[in-house]
Image (cartoon, rainbow over all chains, first blue to last red):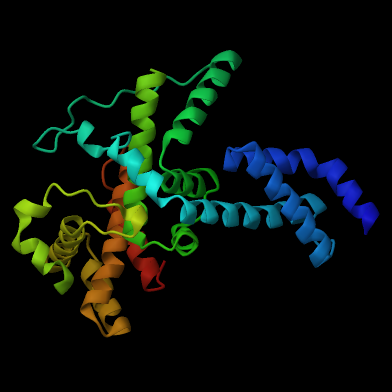
Length: 183
Length: 106
């Protein structure tokens, strides 16, 4: 078993860390998630060889990531309100009093070379970081991890209609931030 | 319908500009009831075609019109989100497909 763990760490540690980092956007949390995955793998010892070790470990890691995101959400409700009060994601900024767009949404120019892509991802990362935690979490769960809505509602303990509203607000918040910082 | 919103509806000038935080478990009563009105209207004219039958089946399944409407409005909310996300007009075929999934037809 010990050999297995060392092999898994050597072979899959970097992959698992990158997988976690892409979803959690926090190096410390990503390390925690990988560590907890390894601990769960040792403790459970349920690898049956039906899939590859990487697939099995990634499956465990996905659950650890969701646990961490759920914990984040429960611990930071007040800061979310502060962010919204600062109108970082206020919907009023987009529309006039009749509900029409103040400014027509601009098309995002997608980066076409490696340097621009790197810069774009840095801006996107920054914008994601500026979203209220719960909006960021639901955006990551739906648009990055592509979890279905039923599971998202269970994980975040929200109603289905509120989930769609939150996804809308997350998207609008990101759009606003990208328009200010990228276009 | 939704007696918990009645006080708010009776004083709209006081509540219209209030912010609601779905991430805190709050529901915007104006949005929620407008979704109810939308699906009631759709059922009354059977648009998209087939929604009336889906609604009747759901009413039978839940033995509760309100719960059946909630099933419909969740599909409608997803269809609106789908339209916004993909920058396309409302897709009635997609909507109908979601509705049919609710009754195990799709």
